[in-house]
Amino acid sequence: MTYKKKPSWLRMPERGSEEAAKVRSILRKYSLDTVCRQAMCPNLGHCFQRGTATFLILGNRCTRSCRYCAIEHSEGFLDKPDANEPERLAEAAAEMELRYVIITSVTRDDLEDGGAGHFANTVKAVREKISGARIEVLTPDFRGNSDALKVIADAGPDVFNHNLETVERLFPDVRPEASYGMSLEVLELYGKLAPSTPRKSGLMLGLGETEIEIRNALQDLRGKGVTMLTLGQYLQPSRKHWPVDRYVTPDEFDAWKDEALAMGFVSAASAPLVRSSFHSDIYSGLT
Image 1 (cartoon, one colour):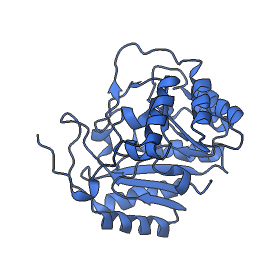
Image 2: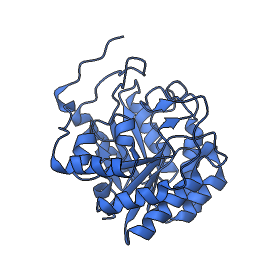
Image 3: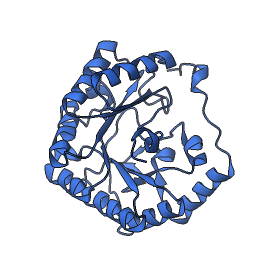
C-alpha cells in the first residue's frame, strides 16, 4: 500500500516558537498527555504556538482499535485512573492561562463508568482553579451508558462533544467496536440531560464516503439537536491504518460549511486541517 501524495493545501504548520516550547515544558512539568501528540494531529505546532492544547486524560492507550486512529491500542491491563490527574491538569491549564479548556480521553471500556467520573472530577478541578473558564469535553460513547452521561452532565461542561467520525456505511469498517446509531443516541440523550448545553460533533472526509452520505450524516446530527460541527480531511497515520480515498479540496470544504449552516448548525468549522478541537475557543462563540 502506498500513500497518496498530499496536495499543497495540507502543508503542516511549523512546530517552533517560544510559546510552543513553553506549552511543551508545562505539559512535561505536570506529566500530562495531549491528544495533539498521541493522535499525531497535524495542527500540533500551530496550536502550541497559540498557547493551547487538548488534554488527554485516562492514559494514552485505548481499549478500542479504530482503523483511522494513531492512539495506541491495548488488549491487556490498563492502569487505574490517576486520582491526581484532574488537579495537575487544572494547574497546567492555569499556568498556560487558558480561558477555554478542552478535555478528551481514550476509550476505557475496562472501567465500569467508562471514565465518566474522572471526566467529571477534571471539569470540577478546572472550575475551582480557573474562575470563569469555559470547558469543552470530547468524550467516547461510554457504550451508551445513560448513568455515565448523567455524571458528565452534572459536572456542567460548557460544550459536549462526541464525534461521529464517518458516515453510516463506512462506520462498521472504520470503527468496528463502536456503533453509528449509538453515537447518535449518545448525542440525543445528552441533550435531554443538559438541554441548555451546546452539543458538537465532527466528521473526517476522504475515507471513501459519497456526497449524499455526508449530507445524510449531517442531517442525522441535526435531527439529534447537534448545533456545532467540525469537518476535516482524514490523514492516514501509518500504512496499517485506513487508506486515504481522496483529498477533499478547500472549495469543497467551504461548500460543506455553507450547506451545514443552511441546515441549521450554529457553527461549522470546515477545512482540510480542521480537527475536533481546532480553534474551539473561537468557533464555540463562548469566549
